[in-house]
Image 1 (cartoon, helix red, strand yellow):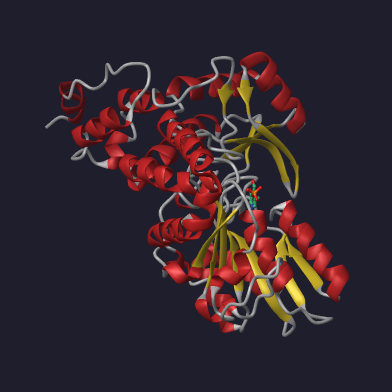
Image 2 (spheres, helix red, strand yellow; image 1 turned 90 degrees about the vertical axis):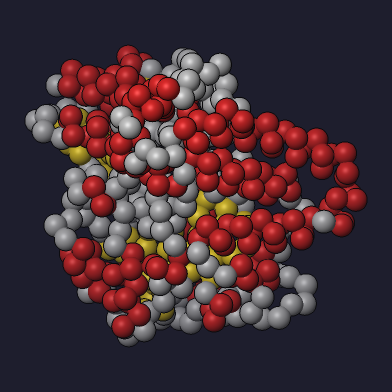
Length: 419
Ligand SMILES: Cc1ncc(COP(=O)(O)O)c(C=O)c1O
């Protein structure tokens, strides 16, 4: 059946102001046979998804890379969890808190395709990865390898480890437009020495949205006996992958980014055989050396955030990972294809669709990134993240599933106008 007729026939496009869980479920049922690549272009469908969000009418939010704020469906669940924990109070904390957290971590492990006893819920990627960087048994002269495009919080932790333990940090620069995977693999391979004890790579570089060939980098590093830690802050819930298929050693992500969990939620995965090699940042109670919960002693924290992970997973699974990824890639390609050949525009994100998803970074030759961000905000009400460093000079544009083509057209026209 013609997909447009199919969706129109479902009668769901005229839904009320907010998409609730029942109408969401009916909507998804009505499109279950539409291929994701076709649905990605169905603006009416995505306008209905948009109704599930409370949006600020005074801006076009292209800064979802910091925080993918919650659809109303998940927000209501968070509020209900806050009420319930407040009602049960210490009783909740003393009885079911830890079992609930373990159960939810197991669900995350399911999505990541890895064993539940290798995953813990942290507060963010910074906590996940700094636990590893700070917790390894470094010796003077050991080398750590990373890129200048890595996230500043992790680079700072490596600097601290260098001061404290005499570790030497080697820093490469990842090209914005590589000609092949080999170019990137060789960049890292050439910087590895017999002293290299850890390689950190981004799954997706936050400045440009560039997806790195993680599996190939891991294979190369392992051949040289070097473990790999992957910064997946922007990957989980954004595009599909499983951690085992990457074959890395450590993986961290922020769930308040692409999984739309409330602020302060992350994931740490450590390969079983590596767990005992890491000293916890905060000392745990007595536990077996290979129990990953050793690395997760954070004290009392907002448990309702943990509980809402389950609801965010429900939303994500209802929308569908494949459908979400297809739409995000479609909208990024929609606007980047329109501006890539404008002579005064510089795109800092690879053109190869396999190397990006929702995020892209754009510059205008005559403007500094801060100036570009200023014009976009003041003249066009576009909110985005200007970036000026690490060989990236432009504004990071991060749409989300509620983004419309009309909003992207505002950006395209703005860029075309700016000479
Ligand atoms: C690549 C990357 N790593 C790590 C982080 C840190 O995330 P968080 O502040 O949630 O710890 C970010 C945040 O934007 C990021 O983009």
